[in-house]
Image (cartoon, rainbow, N blue to C red):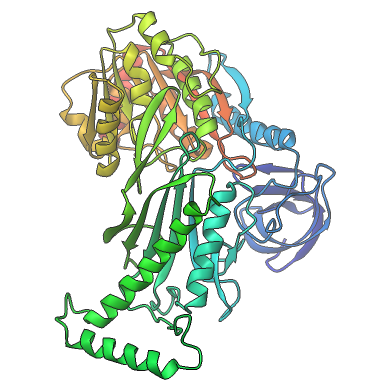
Length: 543
């Protein structure tokens, strides 16, 4: 194969996370955004060591598995991958992807292990409890858009007013905000020119309580505001213009703050007040299913395309909301980590508890009040110290607390740690301790030794230098929850080399229609002496 070569072929399978596999007479080509059974035309854009990567040019024939899709943005928006497939077929694809990855590392394991398939999400559509929408334009110099990045583009943004993985409140809020700023001709932040005002719209909604948190993310630059005369001034706009000029003169004469003219600050505040009022109007008119817990304005001058805060102002309500999960109540703030699918999170965490061996399986999690804590107290296992590493807002730690002597959670995001402490107090749990810091550094300062370790690291997995410290505790069992199976199998290599085996594993679909999937693994210690010797070698190698 040569770079630039055009090939027509059928996609044999899709590997995690989004790698369509096409076999030609000259080798294998990986093509993103394709589905098993599709006949496609591709252009080879990279060739290396007998393998090639290609760009999808055209789907010539649909896959026999495709049955249509309910979303007008499918194929343009970069959010969903499998929306044209029945949900059962999507689950089969994800299950085979994860099993293939695990087989690749566990085939060398001497002991047999149990693959428990995949658990689907109880809710297939309108399941997300968090969305980060971007401001931009869909075509160069086009009208303002608000939504998701176009598939394969870093800059173009598609307004996803009909998105099917969020509920009607998200769609209504998106449209209301876009209309408001479009009417006022407010500019978005242009990433190449580093100019503009609007950046992101963060929307979070609790699936159980219905509370909504909205945050408008902007730069600190002056918004270019197109001011229209208020209603009733038609035919007498000179009166309005004179009043506006008078207000402007008064503002210019006012004191300046932080280098920003008072007139500009007043204009921006009026703009933000209008934004807030437009949203609150949705609730007062009864158009929302949920209710606003808070409306925020976040200033972010970072050059990176991420949602972060240089300053946060509360325009209405508070900076947090509450969600309920498996009988517990959680306070969630703007940047707190919380599973984006509350319904499937109950399945995930119930599975983790079951794997930890502390409780019998809870019979019914669909009600959101499963009696988990009562069953935990009945189990009577109060002697163990449990480490919950990468603990986020402490969800797993609190679910394990009733059957533990003590649970210690470690999380690098201080805001999440503070929320975890308040959540534990809210839920009446006094045996949880949460420490803010990097797992790599914090473990050295913890005096207690764990009897069980639960791992739920970010997508990149566990830091290579933290692995020897975790393995060095020599605990009998480790429960590893992974949101990126490729990172999981990389870490499993080290665990296997260090005297652990995988007893069982299961996939959990937290993200219907997307290419992502969670995995839960139960690891058990094999040979203590072997583990210690290998850990010593790992520590020396990573020092």
